[in-house]
Length: 530
Image 1 (tube, rainbow, N blue to C red):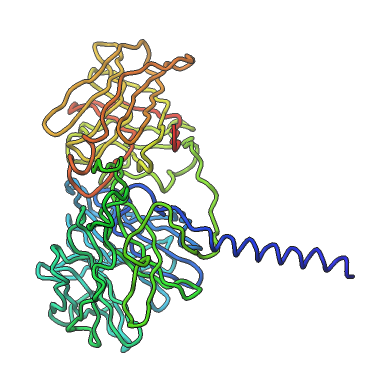
Image 2 (image 1 turned 90 degrees about the vertical axis):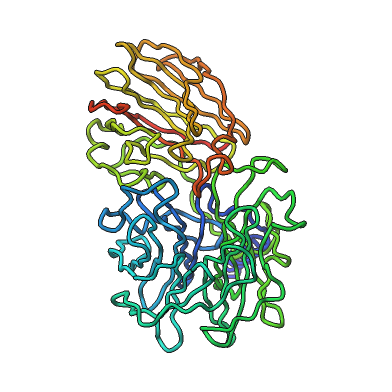
């Protein structure tokens, strides 16, 4: 009996030691990498769910799940049907702005603004993986909506207007306004007071907002009041989160702000927020877009929250965590042998569905060419996924079935319709050429071109913080041919503008002609590091 008990006791002790070590191990920021801005979070039991902005990409509003706040898995999207999301006319960085994710009375709520459609709305679901309802539209003109339920059961929209933060009572079933919009706080004086979230704690209403604009001067500030409608007292620690100061100078993370709070299962408090990683120290441009970061929050005596002690965060966060529960690492290859694309793949605006097929040729993804080009803010024939790291390798095997000159297919690195690079195969005078093409503002030119003798090719892009290099290979050959390299900075937000990050796309276009070339992609590999 004693011999059988001892191993069990040792296993329990070992498990406790591992859990303790895990809880002290810290974590790496960002927690959700690549273009994933404006995070909002909620906890239900021991599960954490998070949503981020998606702008003109479809499906809209990615949903993530975690057990420990550090490790996250993409589990779906809120808006997956055309009846929920109209992006056909969305311009670059139009579409869906600043969602909030909340749970109330057995339902999940996503609250958001479609600036390219009818404005503010909310959707509901019993499970965050969906299905989500069609939008309930709310006739409130200010944006960045959050939803708040007070102790008396009344429901309020909390939004950003020109003068500051507004609160409006609504009917939860219909979305109808039950009161005028009331201005409650203008923030601390920074420009663009936005991204409001309300929490009730210890008898106070806390109003957390972003200020300074979602750029290098971004920050999170907070006020509190005994009354929902104010007046709000300014926190003496403001800004409670920012790198727009001397302490944040030289930090590889910049532009932090637009935060949301959550209380963990162990009673600790945390904040998720956006920020961006610059390409190198003191060379301030960024290409990955705004990402999702995590930091601890303390509530010392006096009741004002402190983020990571002094409002500064790091890539390597050496703080205690919840016991870590990582998910399995995602595979590096997409074989296109499933019935549907993985959640990492998105379309640019609402897809024209007949232009895509996983079934026409089993094991291949077929993209039928659109007459639209990547230079247009239109429904193009492309699927894409986020560039999540500065150093990566992306490659694909392509067959272009074409009968007409100027039809093309390939891989693109796209920031928006005016700033993108393509590595492509093109039909030209009954032959095929592989090209490296540049579109930067008003400049559009072919950087390199070589003739090939077949309509099948393997394309590869390798990335570093400062440059992309472009290669191709003839199937069956072991040698890679280089077409040169291009600077990353011309696809950066500082050059291209906008609110998104670089997406890696597989596309096909007939360049304005009514022809219907088909591109068959056999596989796609995305590997972090080179």
